[in-house]
Length: 522
Image 1 (cartoon, one colour):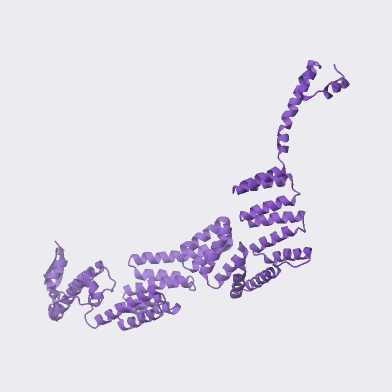
Image 2 (cartoon, rainbow, N blue to C red; image 1 turned 135 degrees about the vertical axis):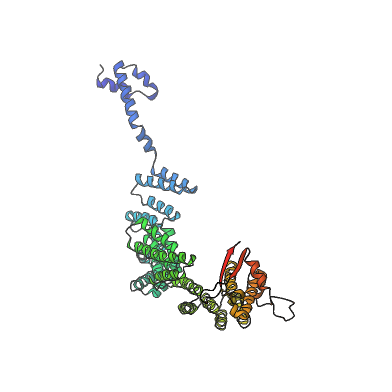
C-alpha cells in the first residue's frame, strides 16, 4: 500500500504526457481503481461539460443566423434557450420581442417587452417600443401611459404625445357610445382610430357589432372577416358574422359560421340561438320551394308565409320571397292577389327589381296600361347602365303587349302567360282546340269555328320560335298577305298536332242529352 502522502507526491508532479509513466510507480490495484473512477466520472460529466459549452451568446448567435434565413420558429427556440440560461438579461427579451414583431405576433411581442421592463423599468427604448405595439393593438390608453413615462424620464414630451392622446380620447368616446348603443357615433370614432392600428381586434369587433346595429350587414361581414383572419377562434366574431349573413338572407353561410363558433363552445348562447333561428326559416322556405316545383302553388304560398312570419323584420328574406309568392298567385290565376303582394314588395323598397315583379304581375292580369307605367317608372329610377338597358327592354315589351291586347293576343287566346314554355303552349292548344272544336259545338258552330281558327293560329305562332320572337317584338308575323287576315286550315292543323289521336263523335240520346265525345289512341 502507498500512503496518501506518497500518492500525492507522485500525482501532483505528473503531467499529461507522463501519465502512464506515473502509473508504473503505483501498485496494479490502485492503477485500476484510478482508471475506473476516472472513467465513470468522465462518463457522468460528459453531457454537462458539453452543455456548458453552449453560452447565451452562442444561442443568440444561432438565433440571429436562423433569423437571417427566415427560419423564425428556429430563431424563437434559440432565443428562448438564451433566456433560460440568462433570465436576468433584459436584452434577451428585447431580441425576442423584435422577432415576434417581425412574425406579426404582437401579443407575444407585448409580453416580451413587459418582461424586459420588469428588469429595466425606466428603459426609454423599451417603453417607446411598447407604446407602438400598444397602438398597433388599439390600446391607446395604455400606450399613452408609456409615452408620458418617457417624457417624464427625459424631462420633455415625446413628439407622439398629441397623436396618442387623441387616439386614447377617440377610443374612450367610441366605447361610451357603444355602451349606450349609439351606433352612429361609435362608428364615427372607430373609423378614425382603426386605420391607425394594425391588429385592433377589440376595436374591429366593436365596429362590427355597431354595423350590425345600424343594419350595415356588409360592413359587419367585412370586419368580422378581418378579425377571424387574425384570431380564427374568436367565437363572438363567428356569431356576429352569422347574424349578418342571416340578415342578408345568405342562410347557408350563416349556418356555416354559427357551426364554426359552436365547435369552440357547443353551449355558446348566441351561436345556438342564431343557428336555430336560421334553420327554422330554411325549413319552411325549402318546403315552399318543393311544393312550388310540384305545381302545388297554394301549399307553396302557405309555407313561404310561415317562413316570413317567423320574423317579418327579416327584410332581405321578405324581398327574396315575395316575388315567389307573387308568381305563385299568378299561376293560380289569382291576379288581384298577385298585384297586391307585388305592391307590398314595392312598398318595402322601390327598386328596379321590385317594379319588375309588379309589372310582370300586371301583365299576367292583362293590365297592360298599368304594366307599361310600372316599367317606365323602373326606367326612371334605374341607376346603372345594366339596369337602364334592362328597363328599356321591359318598356318595349310592355308597349308591344299593349298593342297586341288591342288587336289579337295569342297568349290570351290560349290562356297562358307570356313566359310559357313550349310544353305549356302545346298543352293549352290541345285543351282550347278540344273546347272549341266545331263538332263539339253544333249549336254554336259559327263562334266555335272562329275560336277554333284563332286557337290554331295562336299555336302556329307561339310554337314556332322564329314567329314567336317576331310576335313578342311587335313585328309583322305573317308577311305578303296583302292585308288579308290569315286563315290557317284549322282542322288540318288540329289533326296534324294530335298525331295518331283520333277524334270521334258519337251521338247518344239520353233523355235529351247532348253529344258525347271519346278519344282513342291509335
